[in-house]
Amino acid sequence: MSGRARAAYRPAMTHGTSRPLALEALATWEPVLRLLRDGSSSARRSGHVARHSWSLGLRRPPLPRPGRAARSDRIRAEAEAVEPVRGALAEAGVDGVSFVADLAENGSAVLHLLWPGPGVAYGTTGAYPGAVVLVEGALPQPWRRLPDPVPGAVAAPSASPVALERTLRERLPGVGAGTTESEVAAAGARLGRPLPEELAVLYRVIGAARSGDTARRVAERAAPVLGCALLPLDAVYVADAAAREVGWEWGATAAVVTGPGARVQGLAGSPGWIVFGEADGDRLAVDLTPGPRGHLGQIVRLDHEQVIGAELVADSLTDLVAGRRGEETGVRPGERSPVVARVNAKGLPHVEAAADPALEVLTIGVRDGAPMSLAALVGLPRLRTLTAYPGTLADPLEVGRLTGLEFLRLGVEEWRALLDAGAVPPTLAAAVETHGAPDPLAVAALTDALLTLRGRPPVRRTVIEG
Image (cartoon, rainbow, N blue to C red; front, side, top):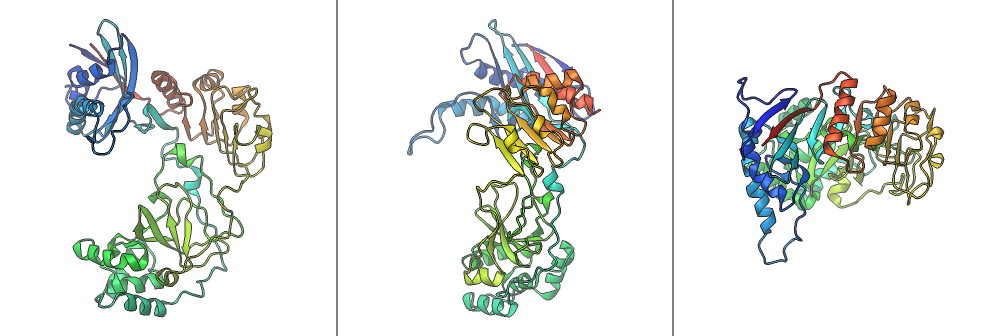
């Protein structure tokens, strides 16, 4: 094959020169294009290639049975095909690029490269963008929420630095000197607040001050006692919302819900969550901003598979070491909250059933019956997120009457209707348009239209023909 590159908007260049990167050379992509053709006479294929991963949208064979080769021939072929692209990414200092390839019967190809930009990131969904961020630096509402004050919160009756130290020395004889008072004070200065008293005792007794082999040995020895791997003191951190990074498409559909009987506040992060341990990918923290029925200094677990909230583990570090576990007394998982609602075949039957002054997030999914009106949602004071599967809205223009939306996910046709009518809500901070697996180039065009509407740079594309 031979080819030429014509770049839409601004071509990727090397260090200020006019020479296109290897990423924009057809020869770099030729093995991928041959694999994508895969015997088809003509086709449109799309995917994403990153430095350490790839997604070509090809059907892979079932996983091999135990005792056979770890990779199938197909996976090995994919790895060989993407290797030139991954090498070019590394050379260019680019994390990844998405692509759409039009493969013609006569052997020609048109390759569209879609590059990450300030308003959109590619990669998590192949050739589709993640959330299109319409306001620079905007964060989902739960990531802007701070803890509610709990003036009457006190430490649990079980909390006892003296008992904690005694128990630690009994269960870890000969543990050593631990960390010094000055090291504990320095950690507090780094965190912007003194270490909670029980946590300071923990590190004074067993904690290695700095990362390294010594800290690792201490953590391994303490793990059976604590039920977690103890972080070195210099790795202790505050799990505020910024430490729990998440895309808009996930963060906007979450909500902060803390019932009057909750022990833990349902936050994305808190300046009062001091992380000191790790267990199976989750983080353990001392909680200095408890829920209405919680205790200062209780121990909570931040689940790495959840984008929001924390689980109560123990009422105090003393209880944690003694093996006494706490129990949440607030809203149980699965109990319905009016804050987040789902209208679909297994959820609520219609929009009217979800309409509530407390409603923040509404998801309309696949269901039987005619498309629905959004009239019941007009005027709801807290509604900020709406996602609706293609074809579920009787009149997409009703979206324009929802004056508080900051996140919106619709199908391609619904977005076109809003754009053509000039009815895109001006309050939107982010959006997604990948419902229904539409044409990636159509989604890119819609992304451009939304970004241009807000004065943000459009998606940068390079087109290679050969």
